[in-house]
Image 1 (tube, rainbow, N blue to C red):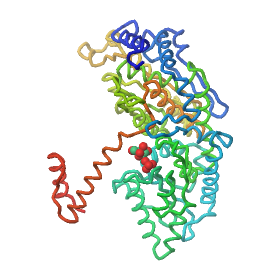
Image 2 (image 1 turned 180 degrees about the horizontal axis):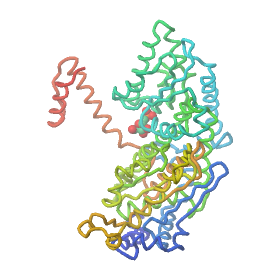
Image 3 (image 1 turned 120 degrees about the vertical axis):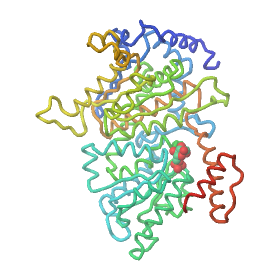
Image 4 (image 1 turned 45 degrees about the vertical axis):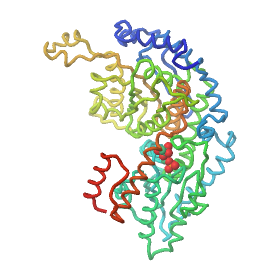
Length: 558
Ligand SMILES: O=P(O)(O)OC[C@H]1O[C@](O)(CO)[C@@H](O)[C@@H]1O
């Protein structure tokens, strides 16, 4: 039976209708029910990660709706689909692949332990040698700068983890004297900003590309190779420079070799690791171990594995990724909210929203079901976010008085870098967290006309100062942010995405939607080349593109 013709779908649709414009089901009322609040909370605890507490009492659901959501999970065979993911069935059917990013963090005794650790042992050996100075650049200098060139999943995950670790005391001390940069955009400005102040003799370049065909990455790779060889010209043999300072991470080892990278300098991974799910493979582990050491990355992998185990084993009602996924489906499919926000109250997580934006939108922005049948409902959400409190001074106005965007707040009990001034009423981290606790209530409760009058607000200003409230959010409170808990957080949001895809009945693990634009760019590239080299006139495009392209070619200089 199709998703939208099931009885559970109909019940949830009518439950959602019941929540609209019903003052009795306003969050102000719901949040006052302490029995309900106790049910809409769960905690996952681990020795290394401490507590991860999820409170979703500020979601527009009552207990009967919650039961319906778990009925939906069962009727959509969620437990069986989670099992298929865990056991390695070919669930990415359009690409004929298994989906196994969770095997990357299972440890030596895991299902793919031998293969995974065959690579990880090489990564450890290589990164230890670079860090200790046993592996030097071609002119004999220590390789203290690393540039990782890659885009999309080959950059966003590693960049998020890098930012998250920068202020962690253990990682920070391991990174002392080292720099790690990422080059993603094919915009030459990004290349200049990345390389301009680096010394080629002390720089190691990593080309990170699953396919080793991505146009942007390949052009940046050729540009960086040129920078490296020019910068060391006359000081060392080119072959030696490339052999010691130019390495690759890819699942297309042959292609990397064709590009000129020596086999021993290629760190592989497997086709069962999707690009956006690849940060736990060499994609993340090579650059981040160079920066923070292999043991730090091992701890990150253990954190992700800790949540994999929770996801694969915990009952649905206390399973954090399952609950978050069901809430995502509830808010988008039934309540009709098209956007959602990820709001970490942690500067270290500033790139988490960008990473999860790709994980989620590239996975679940689909138009057909697993069998290729066109869907009669929308899947996926627009995801965006910024760290708090910065976002409060940017787009929260809209969240409070404009459109509704269900939000996930993420906060930590301990700061990575505590600051406390004796002259201040609270420590700086407490100030941050005061906002973490206040904003969800402001969104849920709002402020009524009566509240405004009681405050003595002038009558004509009252309409402007009313907050409707009833804006849903969840809060995730964790003990601390370190390599282990960063891994946990990553896995929570990876699995949330899978849960939503499973419920919707789509393939969350392919991404055909990125291909058309790439193909058209190829056609434009050929035209630009023909015009620049042979003066060919613009042909084969629609009137609008022809006009704009002619204007571009006239105004721009090569
Ligand atoms: O690692 P690759 O093969 O260079 O791909 C980079 C990115 O490009 C995409 O294929 C499409 O944009 C992403 O899925 C992927 O993460």
